[in-house]
Length: 122
Image (cartoon, rainbow, N blue to C red; front, side):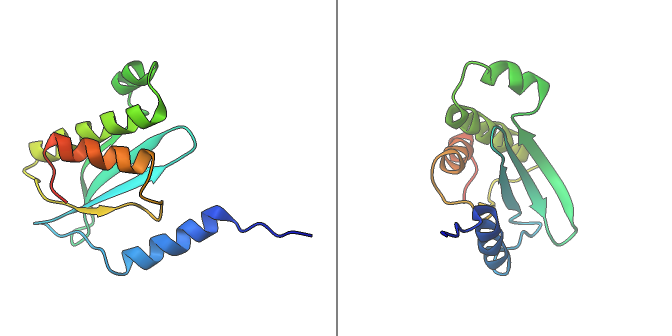
């Protein structure tokens, strides 16, 4: 019998390992990413005060209309641009990127690309 590794359990291990080193401050908050099967979510978080400064996802009603005809990767890039605009609205220009244990490829990479294009610096 072949035992397949639980990919989500491995992701959680990677996420905890990264979170031991990565923390957001008031000057440089953390850009956190969560990727489900169909949706993508991101937040700009100040870990010192424990507050979320900005958030964006594909679940927002106005975004859902835009991403209806897009691929999931294109939708992730759009969410990245939106989070950058919302972060700049609260005077955040530099962030620490927390990929949440996901591999830096596909939708996670597209979100980071969109955030950079929107004006955020990692």
